[in-house]
Image (cartoon, rainbow, N blue to C red):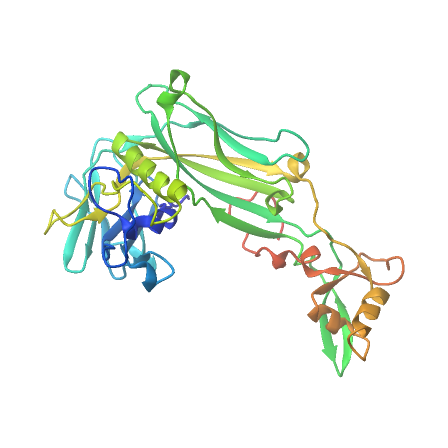
Length: 399
């Protein structure tokens, strides 16, 4: 199940300095006295997925908080259909984050989002769902051994009716440290240190997972391409030394068809957040979308709610295909570490001391040359940069 993720993170960075008008501003610096605050921001997408997330917040003055958005708590958020039905009220999963579990959309009906907060009702325009074409190909490319890994896609509408697209993605990757070990956990009993063997389970610190969701606004217009076919659109890129490809990497891409108004809204937002870089720089002023305050239609509201039935595609990339390991994972003898410790301490260290200093014992059934071997914790325990939360869809039985 894929949750729709709105792009509020990047977009809010400049919202508190918006002048709500119809023309672009060539030169504009807004001081604290004229910053428009308390403007409601509603973002999200009504999709055919079973769980849809909406974000509700208000703009604030820059000096009030490190963020330019204040989450709106206690709002009532629901999805309306033009046949008179209404979804259940959204569950407020986090401050300002509202999740609605909704049935599949009917392509012949229209839907909108309704938000009740502060004694007022806000509602997006009723819209018919756009059926998103499938992603034709999702693939990776690496120009040479040391080149970064590029994730690209190609897509088109075989009916040649839809030309505007937006993409979000989730990345999951399995992490393994450089060294495995068959012993772990330093225990202290009666002032003596012990290294405890694993019992009937594998190394619990050898397989971990990490995840990330897309933050940038990814939109494109297929009319810029021959035959309206988007070719080699860059979704993500990262170094071939990145931990994401140290064992097994997966990217799950969601493609959404947009209408022209939604595309222009996200283009303006992308320009404001990625090119301007500061709320005090020249910026577009057209972030009013399709949301209206029922009691006061002249009240400015920021956000655009579109309705789409998305498509998804998943890509796996293995370590053997792309990984170039340059992590410094040196092995140290215990004698060397004792000598280093004695340079600043009177007494020689025990295993617990080395553990506290960020070292882990590396043992695979035989002693290393020169005695016991140790390495930095990040070279032995995957929990130094991952978690034991394995994705439900992961294709192996690692624990």
